[in-house]
Length: 548
Image (cartoon, rainbow, N blue to C red; front, side, top):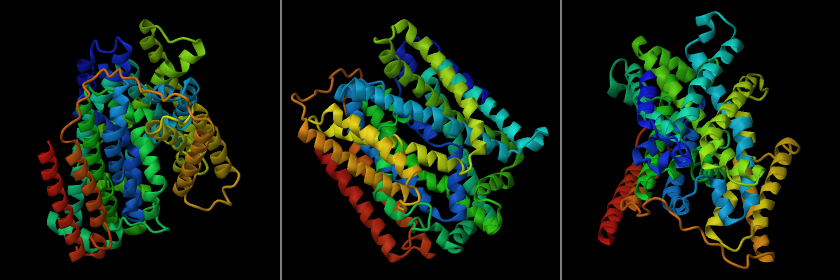
């Protein structure tokens, strides 16, 4: 951890004096740093514990959240990112201001800040603290109660993570994320390999054979209605939710807005998509290995990965595991704090003051804003310990207040020029009211899966904007500002890489399906489908080379 901090400090010295340096790393991030930061920002303790627990208790169906996200990274790299960089935007609300008006900018920024401050930041801090406390048995180690131990972990993790966000800005976040990301991949592969050796009685290949032949139903990713993630939800609300997260969520896309060129941005985003396809192997297969080793007897499914780590990793590696786990938590936490400060300084405060902040005071104001956000999260995070419905229920409910209206108005803003600002404002107000009624008043009446509810609201909100366009069309087409501050030459390999990535998503579902490993053996249908994917990629590569 000290090494990561030292490298981050050395590489960011003198680079945070301006607003662009602080918020966007001077628009100088390369593809590797973008991909590393995206990986660690997205993955935290809740995925490490929760995904493995889901695989242990059910099957591979929850991999849909990770694998299908690769499709959204393709959309981000090829469609959204060129438009964002062409306008040299710093925040998503700034883009909405250019397309609609200041009112939409402020409403979207407030939605983001409320969601981040009240739910997302405290929940990341809480889940990370809880994971460290459980895996390393902090209460027994220090002889204190569980809640006081949780408070101590929140303060330790929160203060350390806040240092990166407050003093180092986005560049420090991206550099530390990349180094910690390498550590996460190393530990992930190590746990997977040691687990296979364990169930194979000391032989790696025997472990692979037993994993594929014993309990093959665990290797099924085609979720039924009784599974955590039914297969049908992939094509409704999950698609929309992933588009929101990877294409419009400020704390995720901020490092892509800091790309030093469009080509580097596309490389980083698409590389992060390949990492997402790896997630089922690193963060779900270990849960199934835990089922092979311990059977269904664990007290809760969330103990699967902690038990595996304690039993498989030698003592001398536990420190590295702790550093990697904390690094993943720091990443999500400090990225959120940095983005909250960015939104406050560039989208909220200018509206309150009636004019933008002076360049000389922007960074100092951002540091104070980051500190306030961090302190507020320290107070809220421990309270989630007393949540009656659990952490996941809270996150699931409250994220739904802002994800669907944001992706709706951004999509409409990108692909049409006639829809007026009043349409975007009506959608935001309608969604907050309708979703609140659905979750808190008519929750017992509405029995559909929450992801299907996302899709229904999305369609209704598209209809609202279409009606507004018909009744109050814009007289003059709005033009996106042509003020790019980076090289806008696309990466020549973007299209074939996207095709390969999409093929890997399909191949992953074929592998973990009733015609793949879930049948106990790989069928002829599986190999035929894989051969077709390979042939399609070869043809696509040849076609792209000819065009180039």
